Image 1 (spheres, rainbow, N blue to C red):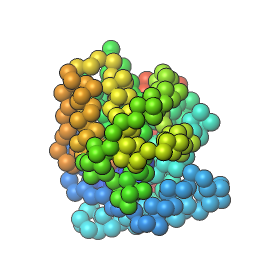
Image 2: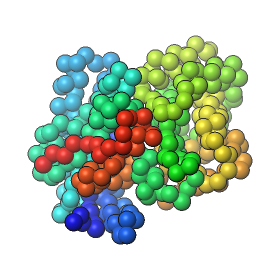
Image 3: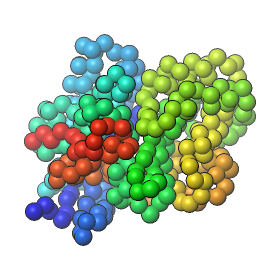
Length: 354
């Protein structure tokens, strides 16, 4: 018999490089229905040194990546230990950690999340469930997005669940079949230009709002091949580095205009992604704080009710869902849907280290 309650820590580092999200979560399952409570939670920002390493690691050699993985696993273990000590946490069922994506090339049968080496269990002296993407890619899937099963289990009252992080991804359930895919880059691009202005990010989208649309750039962005592909599909930082930024850098316009145009691009692509333009959409991730982006989405989707949840759910939804994926793995239950990733079958993904 499986337990009815689990206490775990969910750990997530997203491509927007905001930092490492950690949240202690209580899960309860009764009559096959899951509920959750997010307890202590925090985001640990990266030092400039780590930020710079993670930004350029996509171009590292295999030897450099091996060393980076070792160092990052040590670092992540120490961050988790500090979180456990700070909040005097005990009696955990597991720590469920995503790691940090460096390379994501499912078309080549390859994805790499660093911080998932076996030694992490010894560093934190806890059971660890991690490395959730690799098995899906081996089964012919995209290895992403993995959040949709959590949307189905924990947020089924919404017609759409949209996360605005480094990239945007959406999940919904037409005909009782969950589907999901990455829509477009979001903060990977907006933060790149905010950084050029000496800022970490564009607070509430004020800088973007101050610019104006460049229609020629907007049309070129909207014409990119990725947007014509059918799902399942997913994006990695390679797309931003090799395609989006070179295209945008061809334009001799102000940073404000580039950010305004890209915000319009995100909002437009989001509207295109929704098959039915009515109902309720739950928006989470750092981009939910970008008032200008939300305003443009509402403009393109006038009949959609946009719901932005409490701060803990908004900021820690991905940590919450990877915590759930870890619990499902402990129970040997399906935690990845092939309708979403394109893998050969639904499966229970992740590695357990003790």
